Image (tube, rainbow, N blue to C red):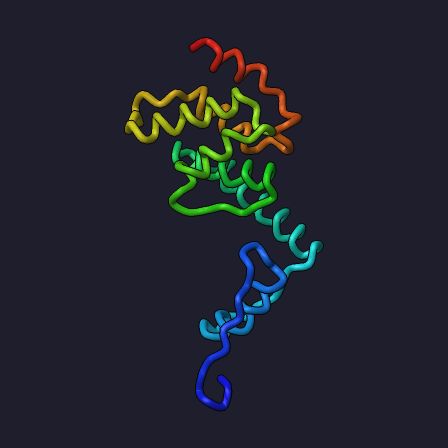
Length: 159
């Protein structure tokens, strides 16, 4: 505020991260009472590694089709884009974006879409256990771009 009681407005160009972060620090996060700190590369890398380990543990223990697909989507999205995703949109636009990624083999994309269709159609008793197993295996793969998908390709290619 200046001496007349008017608030100074600072225009920030869209996409200007250098202007956006200080603005958020100053104006938004203090209102919420949240501490704000930019992650350095080492902290970010440690966070992503730890998160992937946790998701892999959850995926290993998962038996429900929806959980298997959700954990696989989170792991593979993080693996190919280095971004963290979660929430109700995992089996919608996030899955769609993931299956369009060049790093995701087409057979893996087909299997995830097929599993999603089974889940959406409520085909619990008619669940394709092979697709379920393949999707889980792909989620647990260390690097999906180097993972052997020959069995999956043969299976989804029969359609």
